[in-house]
Image (cartoon, helix red, strand yellow):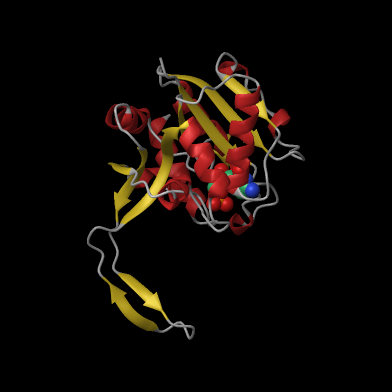
Length: 231
Ligand code: C5P
């Protein structure tokens, strides 16, 4: 039977956060940011393995004790220069070690989304387990969308009907995801884009705004509030 494997790319530098450490290690609710996504994925029974992809030069991971996740976690220092490369390298390493099979499902989740909940992961699994392609968590766009010209003036207002903001986890079968990432255009920023470039149409599964990506300094405060409510 196909297994569910989570993969957390955590090899980015996160320079927009303005801290002197990679953003996945910024402290939130007393723990490094990546702890929170890891903790959620760990507590989803159907997920059997969680692979964390670190930068080869990472000096932060070993400063913390990850023993509570020991029976599910695999840490690999094979991150690349882009997120897609980090995911690809992680999948190839898992496949070479026979820790993952072609038909296993991979849930790729950003280390910088600490607001992920168990209920959201369960919803994603329930809605995609029988799907031909796979899909992703996403939320319908709430704001009005403006297209700018190169003078930062509004060129037009884009209709927001049927526009969704992509989140993670994004869930695809190993073989399809690897093929897609290997053929993907260089500028993709998520896994679904690679799948779309092959001509497939990933399913959108309703996410939650709490599962936002921590990117700017002010995001840290909001993430802290969300996590304080949880613990
Ligand atoms: O930079 P951004 O917020 O888009 O990164 C999303 C996720 O991808 C983060 O968890 C980050 O650590 C990871 N990433 C990576 N390798 C890179 C760039 C980003 O694993 N080269």
